Length: 388
Ligand SMILES: Cc1ncc(COP(=O)(O)O)c(C=O)c1O
Image (cartoon, rainbow, N blue to C red; front, side):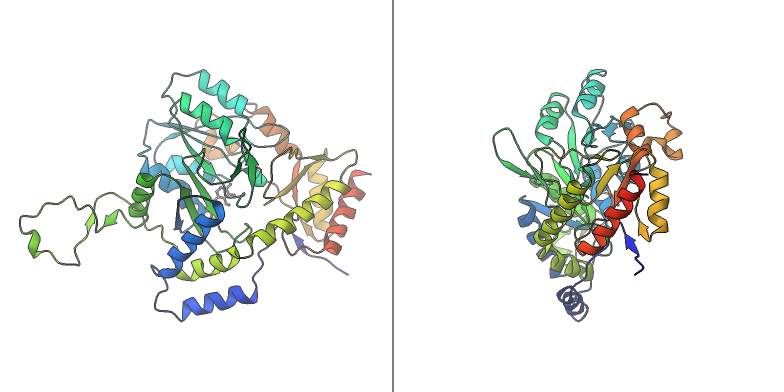
């Protein structure tokens, strides 16, 4: 039997298809009721007050920064081991991006390296931080919030990998990724390889009402019919059509077609997380061998968007798997080493843990429809290579 196994894959059920067909036959392809329904359900799933659906995860990172007025001359901090969008969102506002190294065991931003970076500069030097729940591993936002408060930082959690993940805080309370308890806002992506697929799509979550209202306006060009600022002498001549563009916003709307698909997928989110945990548990059990380093998941509940291992000869393993029909992936080429970011002076050697991780990491197939037979095949091919 020949295999073709990707590292990630969407799962579209019959009910997903039906939901999209219903949206197509409805009165609204966009700006309709399926968007607010999805927002309401997503907020309930995550456990936050407000959710704003947007066109993709990148828009979900950009809008909160626009809303807080991030601008040229400001500085933010993020991790080098993330998708470029976590850093780019700040660049769209003209802000400078700094990085803090990762923890070599969990692969997420190291709170100690953030602390060291903050302490080198006066309070107010940095405006915001973007911790990324990389692979689905929840960053300890409780510890980060303490630091952030001491340095006046806005926390924008990049939760694109982590819907369904959580950690238990020092008070014994479960904190779902993106619930806005410690972070000021969070961003999610509904790209097909993620937990919930919309084709393209994203969501911002927050508990801050003022921030929510501002982002709602900015999602649609900065146009509103509320809190009008113009005081027309001939106000009574204005009609129900009247609107104002009060800020420079964007068209970051999602469509009802995408919201229908994502909302239908959301109904199976818990099922998907359960399956991802079974797959991760089985990999963990089989990879208790010399030559393989696993992510240390400690006491957190990882949402397992990705399952990553580290090996000595990563390129060799990647090629070995590819020749066997297994399409692993590398997450990520460190952002500070991208030619675009190198122009700001970042270079090899700046973040040793991130760079060392990048030399050895490989993401193995991880998605709810991966069968046990396929997983056994992947495991056999990995073990065959590392035991050589
Ligand atoms: C960590 C992270 N942040 C941001 C994004 C951007 O999301 P999108 O592709 O929906 O714009 C992604 C998606 O690839 C991601 O993995």
